[in-house]
Image (cartoon, rainbow, N blue to C red; front, side, top):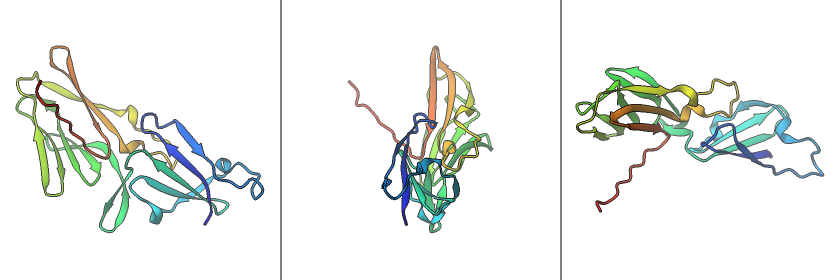
Length: 182
């Protein structure tokens, strides 16, 4: 099957796209990016790829710079890190890990990430109480099938200490870096 284009999508700005077109000019005079998408072929998904069947029978592969799908029960499912209400806080909707964020952050409330049987939790000692602020600007309700804005979610807790805010980005992976004391 012939791929009409390969598209790299950056998470920094979901509207910024760089297209690398692989089209033999002698075979096809039509700009493949103008051919409408018919549906996503979910059988071709990987962690960072989606494949779309176009109305002319060609395919467009979209490669993202972060995971947009997760593997569960023998198939790739779309990641949705949109935060939903849970008991005493918020959790991401669907991913292979669960993030729990309290409604109010203080030194008695923990943030936690659970992956399978493993869990890590932390709190910020001696902090001021701060309400969660879920930033909804990362969510895009467009009808574009290539849009993966639900794979990234941002929250803030303001003034946990004087003039100190905390931001958490829930992206399809968790990374923690600890610098050694100096």
